[in-house]
Amino acid sequence: MPQTEKDRARLLEKANSLPLVPGVYLMHDKSGKVIYVGKSRKLKNRVSQYFQNGEKNIKTARMVSSVSDFDYYLCTNEMEALSLENTLIKQYKPKYNILLKDAKSYPYIKITAEEYPRLIFTRKREADRGKYFGPYSGASIAYSMIDLLSKTLGLPTCRRKFPQEIGKGRPCIYYEIGKCAGLCTGHVSAEEHRTAIAYAAEVLNGKNDAVRKLLEEQMKRDAEAERYEAAAKCRDTIRALSAIREKQSVVASPDAEQDVFALWTDDFCTCISVFYIRGGAVQDSSDFLFGADEIPDDLTAFLTEHYRSRAYIPPRVLLAFHMEEEDRALLVESLSQLAGRKVDVHTPERGSLRTLCELVESNAAERAKRYRLDSEKEEGTIARLAELLRLEVYPQRIEAYDISNFGSEHLTAGMIVYKNGLFSKADYRSFRIKTVVGTTDDYASMTEALERRLAHLSDASGSFSEEPDLILLDGGRGHVSVIREKLRELGLDRIPVFGMVKDDYHKTRALCTENEEINIAREREIYTLIYKIQEEIHRYTVRVMEQAKRGTLSHSVLTKIPGIGDAKAKRVLAAFGGLAAVKTASAEEIGNVKGISKKDAEAIYRHYHKSEDDRI
Image (tube, rainbow, N blue to C red; front, side, top):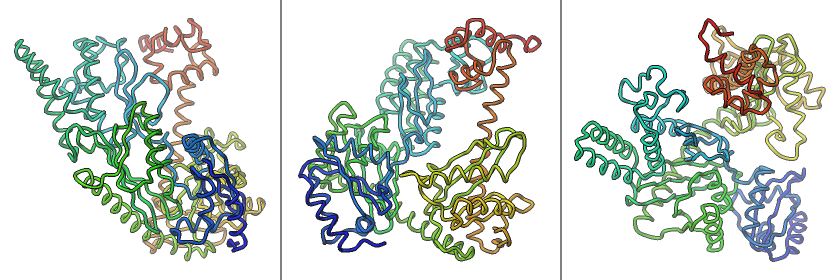
């Protein structure tokens, strides 16, 4: 029911009664769901603005028209309000707030805190002694940087444990072709390895030139001492570092360390672009795209949350857009607190820095334009799909389900979400089937998964509280029939369900109901969309099942060792993160696992270090 003038007058009266102090406000829709969270240094002024007559941008107007009531929290200062706002946005994930991708899914490069440190790829930042660099905008960028640095500096990429395996076994092919210094051979000292790792850390911090200068000085010393082989190695490393530098766009003075943010917004979407500049070159860039409903209102909160997930905050942050002085001062305070030192934030008005801001701004505009064109094409396809399937509602949220299994074990249902023209990976879920035992009953498994998922529609917030506009099943009429029956039982038969019918090549050729098939072979855009969804749900479900299978196989191998039962096997695997690490661990390391005796540790160690004939 649309908001009436009477409703707006009631909300304005309530807003005018608020105090002029810092605080956080929560906007609710008619169902009580939190749809927007904001903060203000003067609650009364900010909240009352929403309900006063006056021009508002289309996104804010859309949000305000959905408000039925609001709550608020008083805070002692703006920093407290910023912190509380961040907490509440994470808790409720409101529809109209711009939300950062979950930080746990961003790729990082980690230098481990081992005696012989390594460069590794990770998506998880832990409270350990390792050094983290990133996050990077994509996994491919992080992997390519690890590969480039490893080959440039001769760092090991194998799974060998150091120093335990130094001098044991033949070196790998990378050593033979000169891409690895050969730490495993014993010819590289711990100090030399640590120096190479330190160089890698400097490069990851964007300080290529500093490393290059050190190497040039070392090359000169080696040449003067007639250590020509060492000098040649330094020369080759300098050349490789120069190649890395050439891959990056030089946009500022050589000592520049700064991040540059730009904002582009229209009635369709918002794009925030950022260039990460280290040593005067663009080391990486990111684009954050938000839909028409999400309001780029509180950029202070967005930028603060962005830097919470990053390993490094540069001394200077440039903004290509205007920010109120009070907001800028709050952002400076917030970022300086996170960095542990002063961080300068400002908007250049002229000169080379303004030109740089305009470059990032044009990037944001171009990215938003591409997103709009892609989305409009996708919207046309989904509208045609809705017409073909005779749907009553445009399917903004499509959920697809598949079942995968390992024999009669590890029955797993996967759920993927296609929302507003994009795969929403943060909303993906898997379900370990509990009620089907000793058989592979797809119908019962699918029914359990759907029932467990739909039980969360009553949640106050979160992805599961959103009702799907369309459900697609990896199956035929039988699957559709049992799920339709379950939906009727749950009082949710308004949700349309279709099966994805496959041809002999395992590709979807039609969609089906309980009674009919709808051929999509001649509908090229629809066929492509359904094929993408089918491939994605299959990929996701198989990956989840494979993870479960690997866990069971690793577990079963350990339980064959005398004295190692289910509980001990689980503890060892959990402590080492997998069987590969257990195989290379020493008896002492295994014995450090809680609940594992010295005798158990020696039994596990002997199992992997005896000859093949003696192996259990």
